[in-house]
Amino acid sequence: MRIDSLQLRKPTTVFDFAIILMICKVTFSLSSIVPYSESVDLLLSILSAGLFALCILRERYSNKILLVYAIISIVVLFSVIKTGNYGFLITVIACFAARTRNFDRMIKTIYQYELLLMVLHTIAALILALVGEIDLFIFDRGQLRATFGFGNPNTFSVYIFNLILMWLWLNFKKINTSQLLLTGCFGLVIVLMTKTRTMLIDIIVLLFLCYLFRFSWFDKISSFIAKICIPILFAFIWGTVLLYQRGSMIAYVIDSLLNARIKLGAFALDHFGISILGQYLLDFQIVWDETWGLNNFTFDCIYTYLMVNQGVIWLILLAFIFYKLAKLNSGKVNIFLIVWALYGVTEVHGLNGFLCMPIFLSAFVFKSMGSKIIKGTEVPND
Image (cartoon, rainbow, N blue to C red):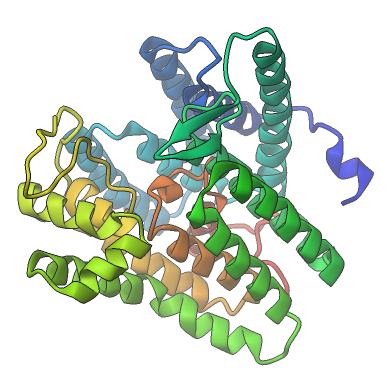
């Protein structure tokens, strides 16, 4: 990594300030040591969404773009009102606003400020641990797992993994095998500290795909996989969920490998059913029973989350967006699409671009709908 890439980029535009506000919202909401409240979260959300909206209103759009934006916005608003998930709304608005902006500059801004906050947060956590105010590790199901001041080990690893994703995106053309191995070693250290199998699998797949990128045949293969990865993984998850409900031993084995994601999906399907445009589940309180044996409930899988909570419409739209992005024939883009889809098997953070940057690649689909091309907005040249 070049030294100048570590120099903090000063915010100079409304778009930059919107991004920084969202970074603060996401980071502080995940922390267990930063004083934070729902009112502060709402304030940061409103300010960032307002600034992104201002960026959009400043642009001159064709009727085609306005129509597409209007349709998606109506669906988003309806879905958000039904589910109460306003974070997803900001991700969509950010993708709209990013359409005519330098994509790499955007990712670099997010990377630098999230890295800065991560460093400051870690220092604060270490100091608080030294004076006995917090513990850097917790015992969870018989395992010692690192949190480093975050709410739980999983969110800590999610934050780190997103930093790795952004670093690889920004330095993609310069990365050699040694750097890939060093990145893998760093990821392995985080995995050993947090005991998160999700990050272990995803970091291996990510680095393996980055290594295969150097071969000429990779673009066609990766494009094909990127086009179908969401439908294939969706079919796998939901097929296994249905088998689990029927008592299939194969489904039970897969469920144990995925740390109860299939069981949680079967529970959600049984209690809530499938939703087209989303449904409100924030107030749901689980009651333990012998049939399910659950003391708490979380989706922890983007495919069950989209089908039951956020709405089937978003699974369809994401599959379409991934298909369009894969047709751009960029091996670099395909790698991040595939990793995003795999990541979604055991996480739901993929809909938040500030915790999983590949979702922001959707901006390239909007950009292709006819408008002036600003340097840096074009699809990465492999």
